[in-house]
Amino acid sequence: MKDLKLVFSYIKPYRKDLITAVILVFAECVFEMVIPLLMSDIVDIGVAGHDVGFMLMQGGRMVACALLALLTGLMYARFAARAANGFGAELRLAQYRKLQSYDFSNLDHFSTPSLVTRLTTDVTVMQNAVNGGLRPFVRSPVMLIMGIGMAFILDRKLAMVFVIASPILGTSLALIVRKVGPLYNRQQRAVDHVNAKVQEDLTAIRAIKAFVREDYEEQRFDEANRELAEASLSTFKNAVLNQPVFQLIMYTTVICIMWQGGSFILIGSMTVGELTAFLSYVLQVMNSLMMISNVFLMITRSLASAKRIREVLEERPVLHESKDPIKKVESGSIDFEKVSFKYSEEAEKYALSDIDLHIPEGSTVGIIGGTGSAKSSLVQLIPRLYDATEGRVLVGGRDVRDYSISILRDAVGIVLQKNVLFSGTIRENLLWGDPEATDEELWQALRAACADEFVSRMEKGLDTDLGQGGVNVSGGQKQRLCIARTLIKKPKILIFDDSTSAVDTATEARIRKALSELSGVTKITIAQRISSVKEADMIIVMEDGRVRAVGSHRELLTGDEVYREIYESQMKGGDEDGKDI
Image 1 (spheres, rainbow, N blue to C red):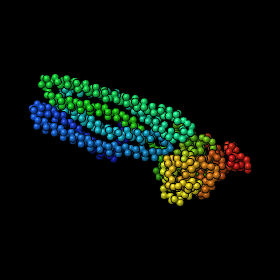
Image 2: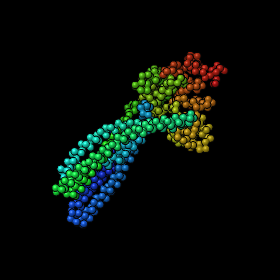
Image 3: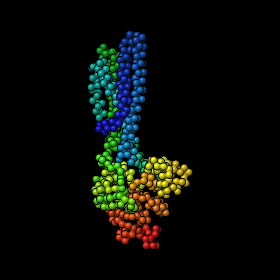
Image 4: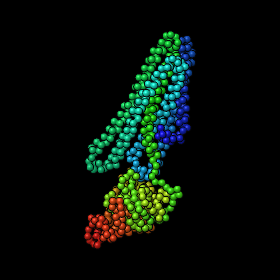
């Protein structure tokens, strides 16, 4: 219930609508409970006395009560819908805001499809619980209490049937809920699997077609889809047992009441009208009990979704700002002091070990090494995408943990290994770097990234739509747009994580030349090609999460075996340094 308490706290802005809906349900119940009493008088007084006027008068009152019940029901639907949809919107917004506060470490705890399901399907379950469950949740106990009360007023002996039927109904409900609860969790996990498969296939649709693997992927999707179908079938197969069990008990109860009530009528201790009214209350009580059981099933399903939503809302960001954070990065110098790092506390092996480095402000640094040597892990510690497990990372002579995270990241421009463009125009994507940038500044950044040559050829120029994820441009063009977007930030530190791998060597050389003209900016380039880093002031050679060697191109060529092997595999003789193959 702790999960539900947390989730339903987000309905507070719509509390007035919720309370109004509850009052309207209560009023609807009162109008409906009056109708059997009026009907009893029609049978016992009007019919027995052949009083047509009395029957018409009571009938008119019954119609009025029915119309009032209908009106309050319609008004309830309006207020309940407003509360439910507003609640759903608040819950989705709260989760989305929480996701934006997550660090990379937090995102490692959840898969993307699971987060999508939690923001959509799970929120819809909670929204439906309010929209579809509020009425029976309020109406059922009201009708139950009033129905039993009226039944006892009419005939105490006959009303004792509820004392016998209630434990049987309660036991049946408990058994069904106990069985169905875990099945709802299984069903939501199956939804995660289907979403994961859909996302993967849509992202990799070109690769699937290129390798003619449509049939194979269709088979894999069918397996995930069948898993969801089987989980849903198993869940609802047990959930629907609720209705036939309750109907069996309800109609058995009605038969017993009619049998006993008929005996009371024969001996004169009860009238036909009273028995008719009593049966009406019995049916209302039984229907209330059935609605209560449905509410319990709905709550059971809501608990599964509420738990998943709570996990998102209560996930605590790993990175924390200091109480009095520094609001300005004065210098682009970088220091690593005895830094070791692993991605999780449970990890047995460190991704980085014993890193000691000093990178002066304004210098150009190249980082090279084999796959898995932790090059990307090293640079991700600079803007605090992750925190060092041991040791310190300093920017401008100050520990990165002393800075405001937003200020630090604004001073560090990083083009990640996976280039990401968003739906929209080229202009809208570039303005991520600086929302206030002018067109001249945008074109200046495009020229530095050698992206102006293809953007200027586009019919709409900066207003060209890139499509979802930048599908309308090539891999090399996407990389150059990402570089331009980063340059617009005018950061003190520029990090390129293998960001020119899809660019030809001539274009890459022009980009390097443009970057070299940026004064006072510390530039770090992670690359696979020697040609990308050979002109750097400092080259760092990484191996198995450690700094193997640091030096200039000439120093490493003569002093480090790994660097020389990489060089020889990529270059051929021609002059003393060699030329690109």
